[in-house]
Amino acid sequence: MESVKVNIKCETGIFNRDEVNMNQYLELVDEDVSKLLPDNQFIGVMVIVEK
Image: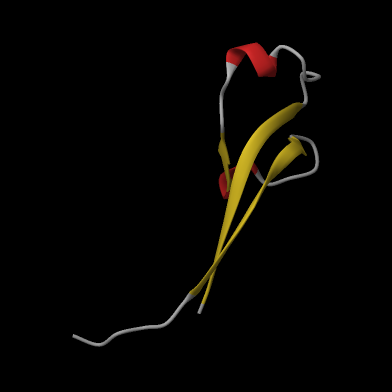
């Protein structure tokens, strides 16, 4: 089996739904915290895989 080296970068934070591609983000849901954010913002993680 051939091995492939990849770089994985993660970015966490509070993101604006109107400014990001939601297919690239994992939304972290905490109902208590989510209530404090405006409707168009979310807490999430974006994972980037580079070959």
